[in-house]
Image (tube, rainbow over all chains, first blue to last red; front, side, top):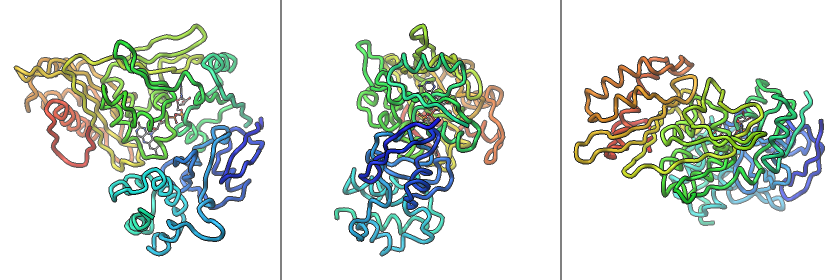
Length: 153
Length: 297
Ligand SMILES: Cc1cc2nc3c(=O)[nH]c(=O)nc-3n(C[C@H](O)[C@H](O)[C@H](O)COP(=O)(O)OP(=O)(O)OC[C@H]3O[C@@H](n4cnc5c(N)ncnc54)[C@H](O)[C@@H]3O)c2cc1C
């Protein structure tokens, strides 16, 4: 049985008829063609599919479309403005915090939420905020340094 | 399979949907447990009843008699940040702050966690140590269930098919009570398997140094979040000595019923539970904490 929901994604309203059991990660990727959000474990463990709902990180693999009805969703695509990457995205490139890139959108959204809420986190707070995101390439050090480099900017 | 979705706005609406569904519906709050089961095709719901937008399931309040009321749909994050709770039951927000990571805390609810009745859940054992009451709502109104009667079997609670958990009531602690929460997890941010945890509330007799009263919850060592009156009796009135903890350790090997899993054997879990119990009791007793690798509150 389909139902109508309104998803506000990156400032744009989408009225969609959905199966109530459809997850937001699938809708973003398959229906809105926002493939920046990556899907991996589907168990809330890896953090790759992290998006912001009303400004806070959530796992979009565990978020059903009706749960997101009327809520504000932000994905990694929202970080770039007029063809320019955000300072955090630039820092990820500068510091080598991106290798295979699969986890990167999740880290970027988690760190974006951290910096919006707490503009001057110390190293401990950065590590604490990122503890739910897995990266199998970088060893985390460069990611932490990249986030620290934009603190205060 | 086609699924119906009810976005309930009141307890009555959710309960009447439960009645209509006749046992075929699943309640959903944060979804961070249920949607995993759906993604794995272990659950294929034909009717979902969303309780997360019901006003009566929200809010944290201190009642005139000192009881703290937590709505079932309150998130772990709201609990971790709650001044009202931390003033009286500091163990509770500190426990909530260590549930997985921000992504899960922002969405997962205390009610969903308790109603999942996972033997490794943290909130259930905190509620066991604090002797909380689970207030259920059903077709005939509300019904109070003592937490010690709430967890009946693996992933099974005392709720009936037409009932939901409305709120949790934590009674004021007797004067002199102290609490602590201990958790042993392989990867604390995301692993949710092989977690051994202990919640303690105790009153210490300041002149004799004995344990006047003690109440415990055991996580990760049985079919349900567990309590043990036998162990509590052994500890009550006793001095916390090496000999006492050795006797308790031996008794725990009989009382606990952990299973072997991909990380730890059942016997290893019994051992870790006994060590964590001792450390957590001593943390509550006089603030001492020995050892590494264990998260302690
Ligand atoms: C990566 C990861 C790590 C985790 N780590 C921890 C951890 O360290 N400690 C810990 O304790 N938990 C942990 N969890 C589990 C998680 O915190 C809980 O399972 C979560 O709180 C469930 O809440 P929810 O609101 O999302 O429940 P849902 O998924 O919505 O529901 C769970 C169950 O409860 C039922 N239910 C929900 N609300 C009600 C209600 N009001 N009345 C009756 N039944 C209801 C549902 O029908 C379902 O059966 C982890 C989960 C993940 C994904």
